[in-house]
Image 1 (cartoon, rainbow, N blue to C red):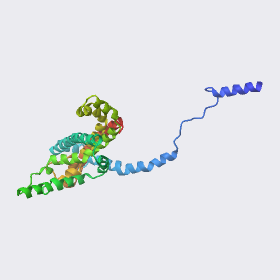
Image 2: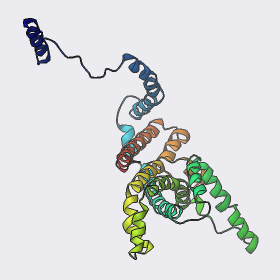
Image 3: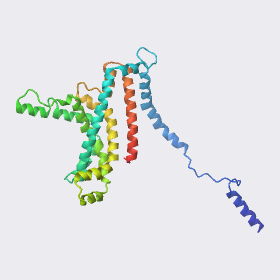
Image 4: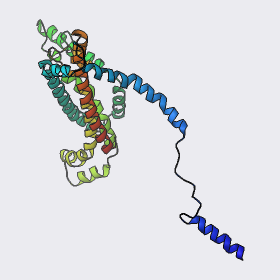
Length: 302
């Protein structure tokens, strides 16, 4: 009996806090091997991305006269070419984003809620369209609306005129049309995903109560689509700010954006510090907008 009492007290002493025996830790320990597996991708990222980016930032502080100073930034910010390129980049990106939001919303509505043969095939084609390079869309527009394209060729054949009326591709409006055409599917994809999760009973209830299609879209569909619109619009804005191929292939005269200004200063003018300054500004704007895109996407669940 005494032995049983002593055994019980010993067990109770070990179960109390500070009872002389510690409980084994249940917190999971990360093996050292996982850290070793993470080293190769981190090293590759540092070598192929962070190191070149650091070189660009370093070069932006080194003028041709030697030394380290803020003179390249002062020269670039004071130039009219940089201010015009910044303004052109911003207004083209904002206008293209608005156009993509409006057109993408309307097309997604038709595909999701208006039954027609081939609707599923069109939705699948949108996924394929996202993999197309931007210059391919620009070339297609050039074949149709270029100076010697199909539309101008048909006009000259019918009227005998020396040239056709479609000359807008070499203007900012041609760049805007190409960007809206190319980036609209980037808005449609999250919208179609959002529409597929919409409770159709809400639409049926609104229709049974006498609501017309515009009111149903405004009061039922649009509130559900706002997160997807915000996520798609943020992504399009970031992509338009960094678009280079469309501006280059349209050959728009007088249209200089930040990416094309980097190309002009580095390749045509051999002004490497100035090109690096413009590149740093472009990267900072893009990273800031990408952070906004990630926040909006996380809240939208995209």
